[in-house]
Image (tube, rainbow, N blue to C red; front, side, top):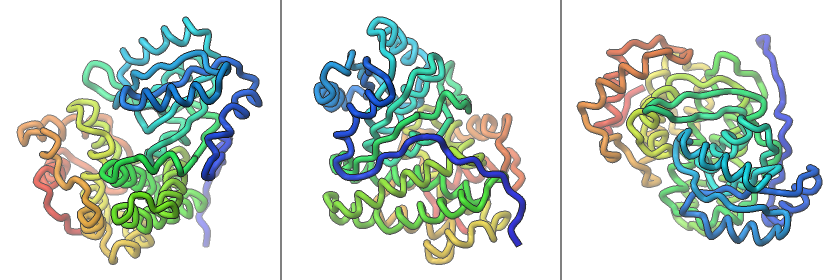
Length: 353
């Protein structure tokens, strides 16, 4: 028997395929835009400037100031450039940091967004914006936040270092895993979540072994689209609440934090969501928490929170923040259980389901 559900497909246009970056100018003009502001992180400034040259007179400028966790003051600086250049759309080139900045601008202006991902973050297909201000990260869900066009060109991910490929992929996998037990899950989101997890379980080890493996890069980016779409379609739970707490209040690196926490939060919910997680457990030797930990270790992921400079003394405050305004979760949470989970992740111990 199929349980009752509600499903709404994403209106975003997805363009996937090797060489699809060449369609950017066409996408801008077809959308009726003439002045695109290209966004990037400082690290990807040269790539952003090259992309601006590629689209010629359609580019009105480059803002290369995007950083992790989308600080409000950075968005305000970018908004000044939007006004000064009279931009009528934004093109975000990069990963979650740049995509977040594009979303923050669109949330304030409703400008058209085009995203050209170079990582596996997945946030480019969600109507969710996480912003940081005053040491706290808050999230907003709004239709204006969803990028209208996403151009997935696997060729752009070949330059992504193996370490970033691994953590970015595990970050995306966390979206799919939590989607499996989301309170508002539906058959379509579940199918996409399982296929996204399968794609990454297959592709990430191949990328570690051979970073220029074109087929593996293609499969990983396909997995990123699937996992990100799940994140945009259903609600998230404990895992994302903890990662938002650690990133927003302790400035831990975004993808790396997701990578470390994923096996531990999966193990925490393993019994409460055993039936929902069963298809994923099969992909990881039958053990969702321990199996994910083994998988992450085998591909060289960071394994403990202490690797990010988080002190053991910080865990008490992190646990307290994480249980404030908690997200829905299949297993009830309390401060003591979250403090114990954080300790396990800080130590880097293999979790038991």
